[in-house]
Length: 207
Image (cartoon, rainbow, N blue to C red; front, side):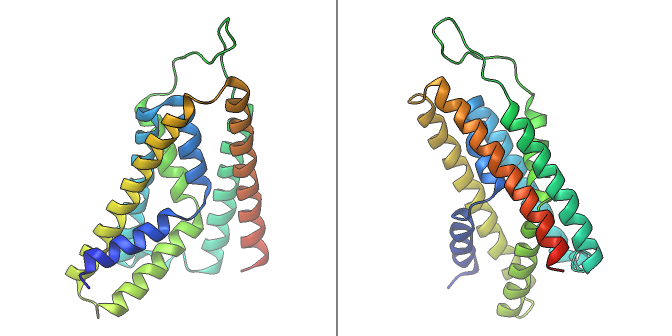
C-alpha cells in the first residue's frame, strides 16, 4: 500500500479521537463562525506540523526524559485549565429578542496562536507523533522519502477533517438558541478544565 494512503488511514483514525483541541474547535466554530474556526484549525495544523518536523530531526528525544515530560505536562495542564475557565465564563451577548448578536472578537492571529499552543502544549500530542514516527520509520526502514509522504497524507487528512468539523458546527449553530449556546460554553469549559487536571495528575503520578 502506498505510504500516502497509509498516512490517510492514520489521519482518519486520529481525527476520530476526542481531545481539548477538538472541543475548542467546535465551540469556536459555533460561537464565532467558519472563519474563526478555520483559523483555529490552521493553528492546530501548524502545531502538528511542528511536532512532526521535530520528530524527523530527532529533537523530541528531549521530551521523552521524565523531568521534561513532567514539566511539559504540568504547564500544558494549567494552560488547558486557563482556557477552560475563560471559555466557561465567556458571555453570550443578546439582543432585544434574546438572540445572540455579533460582537468584535479576537483577530485571526489570535485564533491561530490559540489553536497552536492549545494543541502543542498537550504532551499526549507529542507522544502520539513520537510513537507514530518510530513505527513508521521501522516500517519503511528509514526511507525518509516514504516517511515524509506518509505524514503528508496524515497531516492533510487531519486538517481536512478539522475543516469539515468547522463547517458542520457552523451549520448546527442556526438550530441552537442562546441558552444552548451558553451551555455549550459551560460544557466545553468544564471539559477543558477536566482535561487539564487529568493531565497534571497523570504526569505527576505516572512518570
